[in-house]
Length: 65
Image (cartoon, rainbow, N blue to C red; front, side, top):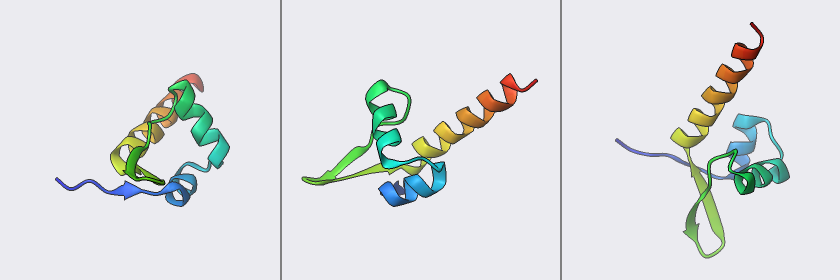
């Protein structure tokens, strides 16, 4: 099973969130933490971001009923 790594622009596009919101939620434990790719680069596992999106969708639909 291969894992895809998303860089920040792709994470922003998929989530619709700003850079500062993503990092604030990472710090608060509300968004998956990035993995270190190098001395000055990070990325997110696509499966982690997809799981976060699914939980947000479920929470949204659960509270609307």
